Image: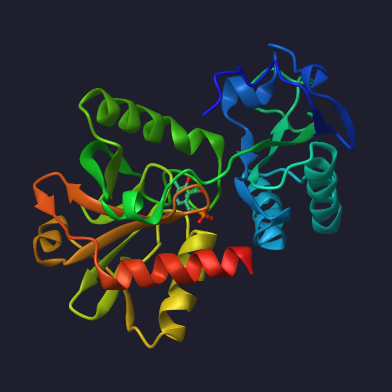
Length: 290
Ligand SMILES: Cc1ncc(COP(=O)(O)O)c(C=O)c1O
């Protein structure tokens, strides 16, 4: 990972409708999205110069904004085209794309009905460093003290910046204690997801994953469910209690950044990344590069 700070790089960022030099994509300290969390974003991967599931991500950006009560002032087609133009301008072949939309500076109070909606799209190079063997060793997670909130407590269907506050706190604690990530339970105590990825378990020959009723139904999650079903693997979306992890054989995370990441430990529970995980990694890699 580069040590260059993200506000001091070469290249171009798409900013409110046009490409601007990277260092000029600035906002003011008095920005509603910064003070009150009125901000939504996306995370996308570029493989061989193509943004995987671009339309789905652009649509989710617009949907997330609507859930927070604002309209992104561009169509889904315009966001798609702007994203492609941004990776082209920066010569990105294998990388990451970060669209973000937020309420601007016209109003500085809880209510901000007439604030201008700002949009930016940035991209940077991010090749996959993991060799398949290294990946198969699996990562270690602790179990977070923070819980995914009830859907009447927070806009849980949106990829909203504010929802990541507890993810950052969870991940910082995990890293401080020597773990790679953190498993978050929901407010009922059910298994929910990791700090930036969904979670799956293999029980025997079946794939089980928590039903996404209070967290993001990730685009990768949906893709992996499709791949598993195409392989004839039975997929069960259900309530999963933490104690059940004792009986799971394999475990992995899914997400745009995580792709399919094997897990070997969550708190007191251990797993052995195995054949189903290996197959899904191979199929997912083939699909994203296909
Ligand atoms: C909290 C959280 N859950 C799940 C996901 C997985 O979503 P996707 O597969 O759409 O990237 C992400 C990543 O974007 C995330 O940040």
